Length: 72
Image 1 (tube, helix red, strand yellow):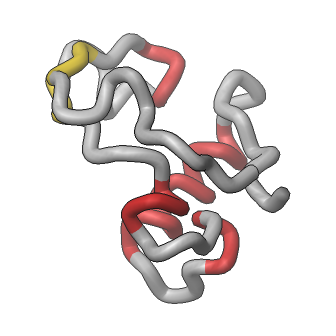
Image 2: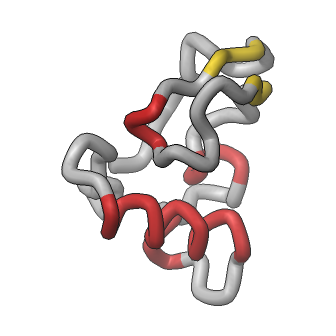
Image 3: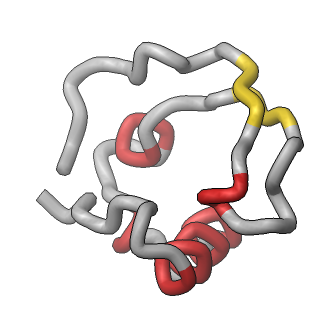
C-alpha cells in the first residue's frame, strides 16, 4: 500500500509493547513516517539492502501481528 498522507503519529514518540518483539518492549521510538513516503514512493518490501527494511522483514517473520501487506 502506498500512502498519500503522512501517518497521524509522524513526529511523535511512542512506547513499544511486546508485539514488536521482546528486544523492543518498553523502549521509546519517534515515528518518522510511512516507509513509502520516506523512501520516495517505494514500499519497504522493495528496499533491498536497506537495514530498516531488513529488520522489519525479520520482525514480520516472527510475529503474525505485524502487517505485511505493503505492496499495493
